[in-house]
Length: 120
Image (cartoon, rainbow, N blue to C red; front, side, top):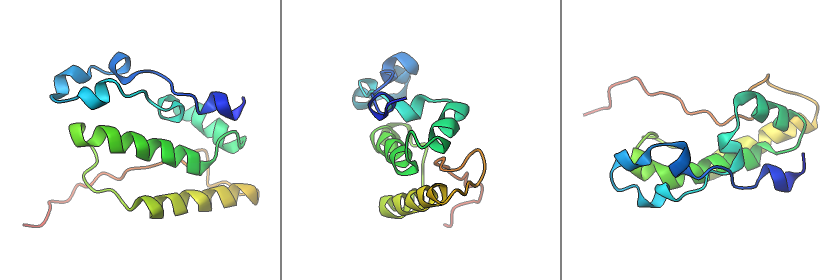
C-alpha cells in the first residue's frame, strides 16, 4: 500500500462516535481521524512490520488525535512528553531496521492505566 494512502484522513469522528453527548465537542465533532487511528490491531501491526508506515508516524497520528480530543473526553490524565514518546518510536523504528521486532504489537502507542489513588 502506498504511504499517501496509508496517511490519508479516514472517518470523520462524528460518524464514528456519538460525540454529541460529550458536551462542548464542536472541535472534535468535525475532526477527521488520521488513518492509523482507525485501523484494527492486525492492520496496524502488518503495516508497521512491512515498513509501510513508521512507528514515528503512528505515534504522531495518535498524539495529534489525543491533543484534539482529550480536552473534551479526558481519557488520558497523564501524558509523557511528546519528544520523549517520539524518541521511543524512533527507537522502535531502528529495531525494525536492524531486523528485530518486539512482537506483534511492536511500535503500538500504549497508554497505561493508572489504578493508584492520586496523592492528596
